[in-house]
Image (cartoon, rainbow over all chains, first blue to last red; front, side):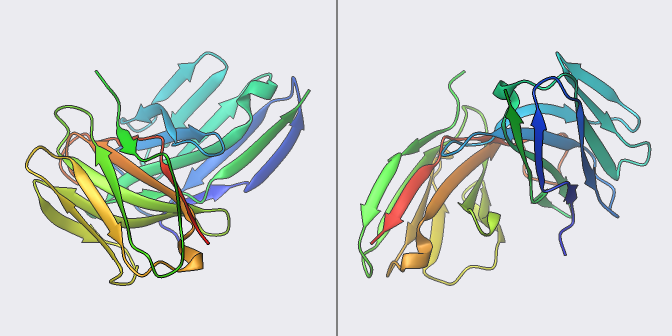
Length: 109
Length: 116
């Protein structure tokens, strides 16, 4: 079992639709990061959430950190083909970095 | 500030050979982690270094080793390559090691290793 459980694993939607990706854990994290990765490239950091209940917006992307700092979500409004990629959540706990298994998003034009 | 750099970007080797990959972290970052990424297994943690010391190690055989230099640059070595070692190898740097204050990792572009 992974410390960070990410869902869904795969998501295929039409351009213009909304979607939410979830990242859950039974452990408390001091902060959580969200990354987006394109094939053959390294993950790119999108955002770090630190405070329980925090909401951060990055254009059409909204990131939320749970009140208890055990879970986070990423919501994309009006998805575009350029949003296609692998989304990963990550965090540090027990002196290690942990990653979710990723959500592969495909946005069809 | 320059990002994390990894060299080489692409590498083709044959079974039994050995390979050394290099990573230069963001200036000022002293923690470097290595990951193996394959389509089937996702992102797998290899090891993490801070101030030239290996702090954490993943579940990989002893053929995988690494080190960090005094300037925080890091190398990883894979000896006696196997077909299953074909993967994208990613290096990430952070200001602090995990568990010490605010920390987030920044990734390099990766080294694509193909073992024939």
